[in-house]
Image (tube, rainbow, N blue to C red):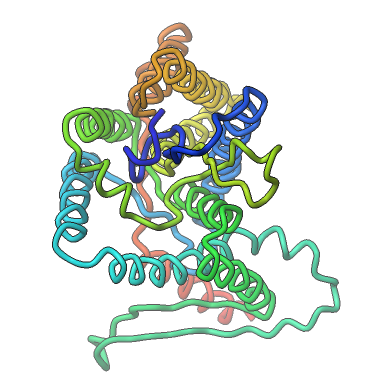
Length: 368
C-alpha cells in the first residue's frame, strides 16, 4: 500500500492528512478499503471477460493491442522516463498550467473510455424501436494506392447517447474533481486497459510484471521522485474512497487510494490466463479463478502490512508474486506447465482484419 503523496500510477494507501483532521475510525477504514478492493476486482473480472470477445468488434479501435516480450522489457524503462520527465516538468514549469493541460487531456480520454465501457450495457436498455442511424468517421492520409487509413470508426445513435452521458460525468469531473467522477473515469480506464491490452504469452506477462515489480519498489523506496509527482499530479489515475464517509457523507475528504497500475498490470495477466483456460477446452477456468483469488490475497496482504508497520507499501511488491506464483503452482501440480508457457496469442494486424472483412463482403456479394 502506498500513501497518496508517495505514489502516482501504482500503489495504494491513505491520502495525506491535514493537521486538524481527525483520525479515521475503524469502521470508516474498513468501509474504505473494502470498497477499494471491490472496485479493483470489478474491472479485472469484467475486463477479462470482455477481452475474450473484443477482437470481434466492428471498429479497428476496439481491436486489442498485443504486448510482446520486447514491449514488456521496455515498459519499465519507458515508465521510468515518463515519471522522471513529469518530475522535471513540475520542477521547471508552473504546476497550475500543467495540471490544466492534464485535466483537459483526461477529460477527453475519460469521456471516450467511459462511453466505450457503458455502451454494451446501455444497449440492453434501449427499446427495440429506438431509431438508430449508422455513422462513420474516416480520416485518411495520402491518395490513390498510397492512401492509408488513420481513423476508421463506425458508430450509431446509441453510441452518441452513451457519449453524451459520459460527457456529463466529464464536465462534473472537470469542474468539481469530485471523487465519484474520478472513480467512474478510473474504473473505465482500468476496464478498457484489461480488455484491450493483451499479453501474447505467459513469459511476456512474467517479464512485464517482474520489471514493474522492480520499478515500483525502486521509485517508491529509492527516491522522492514519485512522491513529488504524486503530490503535484491531478488526474483520475487512481481509485479513491473516503474514510470519513460515515461522518461527512459525499463531501468527505480523507481518502484511501489505489493506483490504477495495481489494477491494470495484474489484470492483463489474469485476463491472459482466462484466455489460456478457454484454449484448453476443458470447460473450466482454473487458472483464471486461481489468479483472481491470488490478486485478492495480494491486495489484502498489502493492506495488512501497511497497517501493521504503519508505512506506505508498493502494492505490486505483494501482487506480482501472488498473481504469478499461485497459477504456476497450480500448473505444476496439474502437469500443465509446458502447455501454459507454450500458449501463444498472435493478434492479426488491423490491416489484415480489415482486408478479411472486405474479402468476406465481396464474397457475400458474389454469392448473392
